[in-house]
Image 1 (cartoon, each protein chain N blue to C red):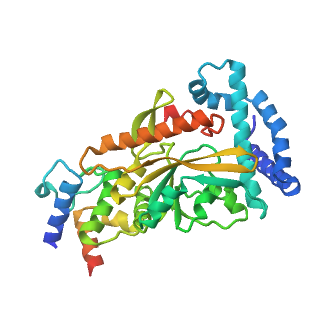
Image 2: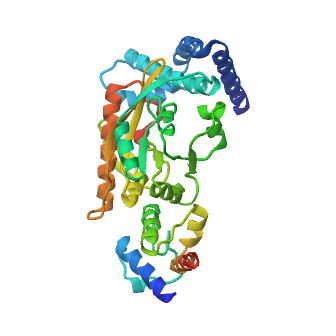
Image 3: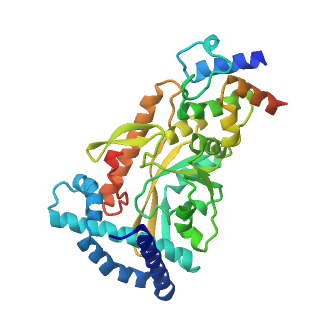
Length: 83
Length: 294
């Protein structure tokens, strides 16, 4: 799980061009608003990148809202969907 | 003072009257009644003139007040006729608006390659009735809109026709973007209105010589799912003939560049297409508010 969280953090920094480092992102930092400050355009990129890198498709906004709370919830979601 | 209750009741009775007129006399009878009705409305009410002033003053900067009044009346007529057409198509099973879809090959080409496409529309021309050209195609069609029951019931397809497309509700988390991504990745067509900024990201460009803010979510969707944005506007040519035309095709891509710049470039292309449209069809502009203020 920690390897997956690290992968997510690297993806966030690399593909969403965040001005931070993977190590500076906490597992429970909120992705949107305060926290990492992602916005709706970043969210679009994130949905596509999660599908591309982890083969996991987020199907609707209810799922998306839960999964995109933090790196931890996203990792949980990916893990669950993979299994 | 007219209370909201009386206003709603009046609106309801007005709709009912026109539905009855369409059922009895068809589209033409409703059109004939519309001319004096809107003439009276345009004469007695300043509201439509005030609402259209921002557009008319930029589209026709040299018109005198009388010419501008006449232009507003023509736009009102066009809008009224579009609403009648919508009801006529919904109420009369045999009603047909003949039409052509210019540039359908561009859409077909994309769909044949297995990719989805975004069709980017504006509140101009016969945009509602022209949707039939798209929903009749052999592909799944989704429309991004606020899922408001009242708004939906007002659409012509709810008046008797089955709805042959899916509505993606934009009022939820991420404005329906997740559903739109999934649809595009499945090779479906997603319709988005591009001329109104109602929350979400926007960029600034110019339209008819003044700055305007336009939404950019569709361009982000397209860039991430690698689908084209087909800018499509429809226009009514005569009583029973309409044309839906692809005015431009954009391929948003910010893989190697700045996202904000690319969004601005795409919005600029959309704005140019819309300008070209209103040059050709100046009286089919149905944004009854100051879009330069949005």
